[in-house]
Image 1 (spheres, one colour):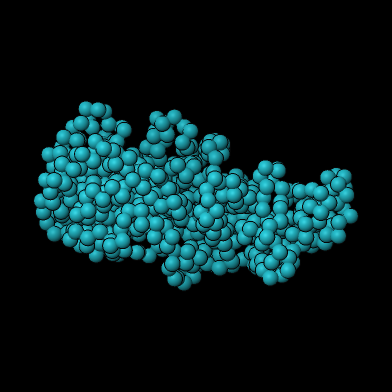
Image 2 (cartoon, one colour):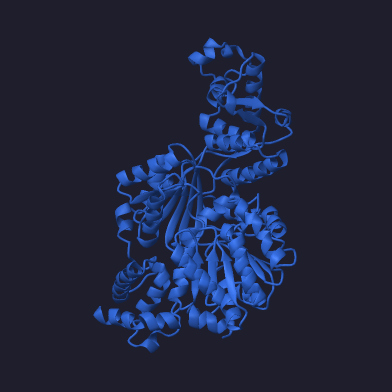
Length: 616
């Protein structure tokens, strides 16, 4: 079959999206490729279709290197549903089951085999690949989540480094490396580490226009999160990211107490509990997963309506990858982040205390500065985000800054006064934290201020015109640019640095956004009860008869998914159900050509779908 026939007959799609066709043609012809494509952009087809085409041409098996067991399971399940011979090798298989897969592998009975990087580089597995290679039955290597190979990537995994063996040992076998997030530094590292210097680079737009970005200043974080979910997304599937395991469990419990179906996920949970929670999130509607960054890579759930960060991530790549898990179905979704001074202090401290070399630390600081710049930005969030990945764009009209332009103020004078206050207390023989420094500057005669004689300082009270919120914003900037250091070994006291001098001299300006309430607090939203009633509604407006058909199809799909132990979207995506509900088919011919219904699915489910149509 041609690649267009595979697309239509196996996967049920009528046309390629974006650069998919060019990538697939290049790889089918035996070329190496590095593919950067946003989450939800259709990366999987870029190696699945070449795998099928090359196997049909007698070129053998494709090995897919994937870091996550859950992703392997769901992708192999989806391929089985499409009639493709695929298997995985991971720790969930019994010895007998794994041995059976290996026997099929050596016979060449598999089109795609999914395996983790540590298994692929195991001597025993390499010996099996050697056997396939000698017989001309090793067709393609697909390295998914390729940013994991880079020390600059947001999810670096040392085991990915060993994948250089693929080029060294099987140089004639084409390789395709894929990722959704990699800035120029990370891209260069991927090329070097995987020896892809001769690979063709396919760089898609990073824009996800259906995602609306909102970043708010942290005041009462848990209450802000509750307002956001209850006013905007009650009853929706979503992900809430937190920095610590304890915070994950506390927030999940809080949401449940407020009537929001929520589950925790972090590496400290029992593995069975963790897997059960992930399965429930993938297979049920309206679940909010509260998680550390241990959760999410490769999650294909299409109807995640929001991703919230209750703490600031480490860098823009991590933020973009995590927010990209929202709205994979192309429908509107939100990325919401809450951040504050302590987030900046914590992230900066982790970098400074890292045992890594100074050059590496400098790179991490630069990435943190870029994320803080995004958070503090007064212009379009999307323009800033895309610029980071080297892509020019225009204001989107769909982020908080575009919808509600913030006021701006010059914080240079406040910054100089803060630095002067830190300097003067140090001259008196002490170091203090942010609250005490701000109390002095604002002229607050607290017990601590008077006991240490700090009301006699020349800077006492000279910043009384500034609010505490304003000064915290100034401090965030100063810490981010390295003009103030935080000494974690001395109770988070503030210290001057070499970079302080330029600010004190007025050589560096500090422009800040005025503190404003979040958009959720500024404008009335639909009530949670109204929004909750939308569960089960189609992602686009349907008339009443079509909505009835859609609801019946969803119920049927849920039963099939449960029977097959797969997420519902692996059976059919919501968009496919909408198309069926609109068409109201009466015969198998009527189902032909609906996006997402390939030949195998038509054979497996066509009669059942028609039965559902007749019953409503």
